Length: 52
Ligand SMILES: [Zn+2]
Image (cartoon, rainbow, N blue to C red; front, side, top):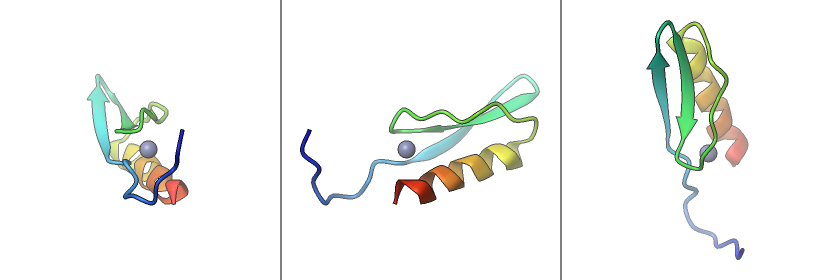
């Protein structure tokens, strides 16, 4: 798969399910279930940072 120098497709969102929240990314990555949305948001931020 050729790797072009285009903008990375890493758009993260957080999803809440019951009392848990987890981060999801447009690349297919899913973060671990967290008890707080803040933690899920942090997972998403770290994933986006790591993608660069
Ligand atoms: Zn991603």
